Image (tube, rainbow, N blue to C red; front, side, top):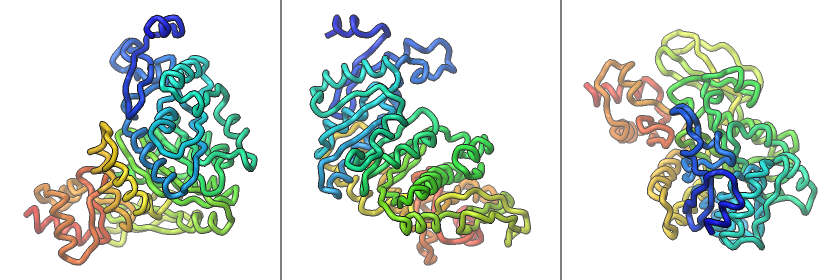
Length: 405
């Protein structure tokens, strides 16, 4: 095997095990010349070991989707790199009948074919080397469409949204990853406006806003084709936002999505926040608590970011699988399950304590006290010091003062 590999590839490689598969990938340390180098992007074929959690969750969600749809699945990964995600789908997800993995990079194409053969899935996983949008567009016609399309780029998924949506059958699913959190979180405002058609805001809950802007962009793009979007699961982790959405046909469904879009208004003076529905008409607002002019983010999705049935389905799948990130995923999904039904945005308890001029208190204790006072409250997967609640900032301040002295 070592001799075959050395003859086939002219760059350093290494075998890695992930889930139930074993694939050949670039030996990343060989492409780092200085500490600031980002090895996955410098390697001749893109592979990021940090994204194993992302791929683990994708396997779980796809299995839940297959069980709910109860049909054989035709799957596409248009930006596949070494092909590990698509190969894992074929090996680890029951009901996956055919997978197309694609990368325009000729070296990635060769590595994908090698990994497909090495894992014994040549009859079900097929490698292509085309422009991703071209490949997806070739599957836009009826009876050629995919059941599931997983867009996991280096950066923004926006350049692939239109072709991905057109290539998914009715009742299918689109999964998106966005790693360009700097624009989405408000570091590069103009870039976010250009790419996502929304104004970001650099707040303590900017990662939730980033996910909601991504979902909103997906919904607005789908509406152009009279497609409805139902977000079934989404999460933020490390350096990316991730969303899974079922797709249905119909102008009414698209209109319903657009009615769930709106704006988040935030007061940097006292941490008060408000929500306003509607895509058009962002306006200047004065904070009713301290009188300061509020800033805003949007338009973005103000509805649910996950469904209860998918969260519960993922947890059931975790019980029967052995995944390296299993415990972490279980904790994350449990928190997301608690967040369902809660209002958009969250409070960073440390920041609230700072504003209140009291000692830092435990977010869990704040949640317990708010619930004791009759409010809804939960911890959040977005931030370890964060918590969601329907209580306003005055009530939250009163709770942290009572707990922090």
